Amino acid sequence: MASFWIQVVGSKDTGKTSLLERVTRELTSRGRTVAYIKHTHVEPTLEATDTDTARMRAAGAAVTALTGDDYTIAHRSSGRGVEELSFRVAMPGDIVLAEGFKSTPGKKIAIVGGDLDIASLDGVVAVVGSAPDGYKGLAFSADQTSELCDLIERLSAQPAEQTWATRLLVNGKEVALKTFVQDVMASALSGMTDVLRDVDETETLEIRVRRIRRTEAQ
Image (cartoon, rainbow, N blue to C red; front, side):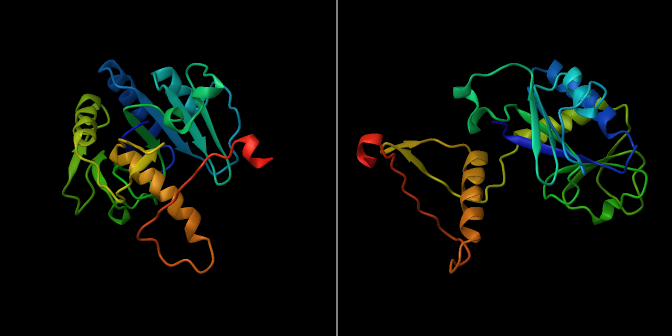
């Protein structure tokens, strides 16, 4: 499972996908496994070869995903058996590059241009293009691919900001979980309990699960 992800945001036709293609090629040449996710405002479909996700696969992304309001379609570079189509390997990669998702919390590289209001965005770690008035952070030109990848790798090496402390015991034996996995598992469970009636805001969660064998159920 990928342990670090970063968003690239910008207005339409400002070169987001072209930038991500170059970044993907550079990161894969450094031995990194890259996954790519793009948000779409239309229903995702199995797409033709001239789409942004197809371009990212050609650039070397091991996984691409197109996600809309109701559906997500993921494309992996090789086949997998049923036993491997699990949460652990659904989105493998060292680094996930997400195109879009401006309103989603997280670290962002913003492309200057169009009607994008960079000052209104949370989590901007760098801009690509001429730095707008009042911006004091890092700024890169569109052809500084290597320098951008240096930044991404530095950010990926930083300890993750942990939201939940999660323990998992399987058959009584504790399983070591990375910070990212702890947060994902706890957030999923919290989201399920938040919709239940008469449940207060979640601070702690305890759940015990036991498999019911067919002979027990009869």
